[in-house]
Structures are given as C-alpha cells and as structure tokens.
Length: 392
Image (cartoon, rainbow, N blue to C red; front, side):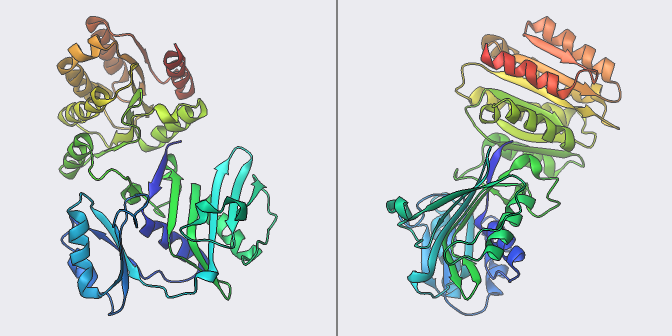
C-alpha cells in the first residue's frame, strides 16, 4: 500500500456525496486555460481561496485568502501560483459561530479504525490534546457510537465513506455541526493508492496532490509520453529517496505488487508507483525506462533495486517491451554497475521466453545481480526475494 493525499476539493466532494448535499466549491488548475471560465460561472458572493496541494500551515504561509469577491479569485490564484503552486480551491464562505466547530479524525490501524474527536475544534486543536476523545472501532464492527454533538448515524456514514473509498486517514477540522447538518470547512484525506481501480472513479490519480510545488522531470516526461501514446503510461513519485524502483506492467498486477511490498513493511522504500500497459512499443518503453531510472539516480538511498514485474499479458509483446528496457539499461549501464543495482524480473505473456532470455543474457553480460522469472513464479515469491535483498 502507498499512502497518497487527495485534493481537498475531491475530499469535500466525496463527503458531500456521502452525506447527501451539494458541494459548491471549484477546483482551479493554474495551468488549465478553462479556469477563468469555471470562475466566471460562480455566483456573486464572498469566497475562500486557498492552495489545494496537501500543504500544511497554509494560513501562516499566506496561502489562504478570505472574504474574496468573485472578481478577486483569479488575482489571488495568480499571486499564489507565483510562489510555485498549481492547484487551488475556491468555495463560498460559511458564516458560523466558532462554538459549533468540532474536530474529527479517522485513521486505519491494525486494530481497526481509530477515531479522534473533540467538541472543541479549530486551528488550535493541537494545543488542547486533553479535549480529544480516542476510541477504536474493530474491523467489521457494525456498532454505532454517538459522540458529543455528533450522532451515531452521521458517524456511521463517515465510517462507510472511509471504508468504501479505501481511505487510511480522514481529518475534518473544523467540522461544523448544526441541526445534524455536517459541513467540513477543511478536510484532509489519504487513500491507499493501490485501490484506484477498486473505487471505480470515485477518486483517481488525477486527484492526488503533493506538497511539492513542482512535478519531477521524470513525471513530466512520462506525462508528455502518455499524451502522444495510445498505450497507458503512468508514473508517480512516492519516496524520492527510496530503495526500490518499480517498472510495473498491467494495472491489476501492479496493485498486487504494491500490496505485497506493503505486507513486507516496504511501502516506504518504494521510489515510485505507476504502470505501462496496452501494448506500448519499444521506443515508448525505452523512454519510460529512462524516466524511471532517473528517479533511481536521484535517490539518496545506498542500496538500489529495480523491479520489473507484471502479470501474464494478453497482447503486450514481452520481447518488444523488454527490448526498450534493455536499451535504457545499456545507456545507463555504467551507473547501474557502479552502484551495484540489483534487478528482479517477473513477467509473462506473448513472446515471454524470448523476452526473459534477452533480459537475463543482458544482465549477465553487464554483470548485475539479478533474478529473472516467468509466470511460474508468483508475485508474492518475487517480492519476498526483493525483501530479502533489501535486508541484506
């Protein structure tokens, strides 16, 4: 499992849908020429404008603007974009009494869902830990719990939201509760990135946000490659200083690989997540592999491992894709040898034997430590081998 943060906009849309009301905020991408049109459609009123990029302490950093008119929104966005940010949120001001502000956080643990709640929420909650009630709802429990000011029914709806969207963390602070109506003024959500297919579009990789103000060169390179390809090519950096670089193929198998690494306690060692599928050609895999290897070169980890893995392809030619990867390895062979990079492979599909043989012959030729497997070896066994290498 790789924990990733969703935009506040998507978090609030999910909450609103679950609780049965319409969320009136808009997401603004500074690089999208349609932003001005989206703002123009807003009704006249008073708005909050803020950076929506998983950035902490936005108020102190001047990344939140209050009581803004509709005509001031784009000026605020441009000013904050000059600091290197790209994504923003504009939503109507909700006038309220601070006495109705609550704090609620749900987090997934081995024991179940841990709930933190305070009837006195707001930006100063960290200064009053004694006000926070903590409790655990064991996995699978249907027991409804009522908290001061928060009904068991509403809490149950949020727990349902938490589970069905594969969230690992949900924080709403301040949470307004008036006449059983819940309104999140600020919301933060982290999800299991490997569950993207399971949530069927409720959230996608496009909703993931990072406090980094800029995407890496590798992510930009793959985005550009995807824009002109009929195949699927994705790349997202998780831990730039991780030990394990992934070159995964096929969405389903990629999820399994990521889950297996989490089961071994190695999710924090993954440099990246992403996948290639849909029969990409040799040139596309060459460029994709170069982009991912750049992440390995930029990592400050002392031990470095490349994992090339996937299921059994239906029509992606294994020999063709491996030719592209081998070309990239050839270009970077001096770096790979100097840094004693280990390579682990598990793949199946059309021309698998030709591709696997080519890969093993090449790795032997340049002298890299490696293990190359076909589909007769399970993904679980491959990841176990990698885990053993990490711990050596």
